[in-house]
Length: 473
Image (cartoon, helix red, strand yellow):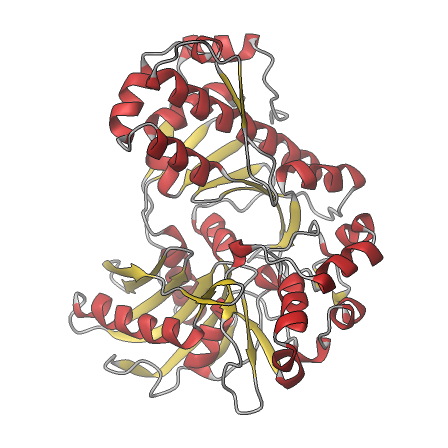
């Protein structure tokens, strides 16, 4: 029986889903290995490939008798791997979240108008992007850029290790700050400005395309079909949106992880605007190519990390904090939390702090603050995508905080649903692998549940003047 592997290399965990043709599926997961160099956290690409093989064996053991027919990979964006003339990595992948400062990166910012770069690539000038990783390497490890013959994103490096094919998906290319999703391709002058060479950037291949055959020795101990293939995947949030059914204008994905990402499917022909560039400073707004060729507009928040920090500060028992905060009326007794904008200095502000406040009021204020920020982000991405919001679907670990979802549902002007599939990105990659080689098979079912707003809370939030995105017809 055929099985299809979906790989998700995440910030904290790497997951592999094995999806059998009869609909059975198994998942294996383990912490993503993290090392350090002189500048901060890094990921060893070959250690990740080894881990993927181990997880593939674990997942397939539970599907006795299945053989791999296709593999598809997804990962965090921004991170990349420099490959030398011998086909081996020259340096670990710089962790996307480290925001390494460099003199070359600052010079790029001074010499390149952020409005012009946003109009070309759809991204704000944020140090998390690959271009600024190149700038750091130019200053601290220039031999890497000199010796590089290919540069692949982390997910595409795994695909390269499995197949030998060198290519990048549109959704990952969109996160480099070196590629234009609006038809202008790789930006050679920008690459030179940070000490790199655009010639090392690979062809951009659509998600779902077959990259090539699975190398016979790529997954030791795993049974594979003679015609087993490796399929192009992409950026983890894009793959999660696709699997969650967010595929048409007006549909929004709210991916609640350590970093929260709000995606809207843009109307056809959307291009970046000056208003969108301004929103990028507050909400991390970016425009990228999605897995189906449609453009996504992304907004970003630090909500997962911020909420987790508050939980630690208040004692570390999130269930108890939820129960207490649920009894607190909207407005948290006048205590208000203003989350930080997306960027390099993620520090929020509390206002209206009373002489005495309960843990429930503090936690309620934090949940309400991040919910307001999410509603504003939805409004910003909807405006930039010229798309009226009809439905929001939530995924990720943060979607399991029930009180946070009810607060958000009470603020939003449209239905909120939660997709309870725990490994949506890896399952999406497995489903894309299946569709590429066995389009006759039906996609797996997903469990989707509505999140009902609290009527009294909704009235209170409406009267409080919260920003709301345009409601669809």
